[in-house]
Length: 281
Image (cartoon, rainbow, N blue to C red):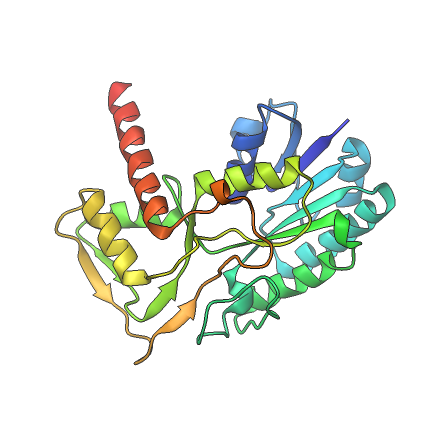
């Protein structure tokens, strides 16, 4: 029987995964401090710094593990090494959420699945090391899902955009930064497909095209009806710089690939539905 464990199910990416998969699969998750999960029989409190990941794995015996944990980098890396050994011994599959940050020293072009990571930030270097640890597994047993900027109703930057509008505060945009994007909804659908088909390898769960950071948020603010936004323009360079992923070598089917325009329209529609539902209640 398939049993999926989401490590970090109460976090941003973990919640996206949990909501998508829970109607269909035997699902367990971990949380750290969210009280609403205390009486949930499939949610297990887990403290990365003091609890044993090995004990949790022995108790639940998952056949697939989705890694979406936050926490101190050394503890994360040690926990992932234990998970990799568990997966090797039990032939369990590991799905690891990574990000465009593994290429944050690359600014001359978008990055593809087969490109060698080139990080400069502490976060990018950490994720690169985590990807290396995953790579110790046999190829069929792991998937690395790299994400670009993720948009959606619960996305931090969308919340920040609305808050800036409400309080008439500045919202910072980068006119020279070229990015790719995805949405919470599409990440969930793509993850579900990868799990169902037991796909392995590195996936860039990203839009099929690119947009300037400033153009994206100007368009979003207009379509969301956030009038009179105050934008602070951050010119980090005289030239365009890329902070972008593109899918090329490990493609999902066409119905799981989207343009920036389609993803922006999806965000706007979901925001309108969310506002309507809130008013209705």
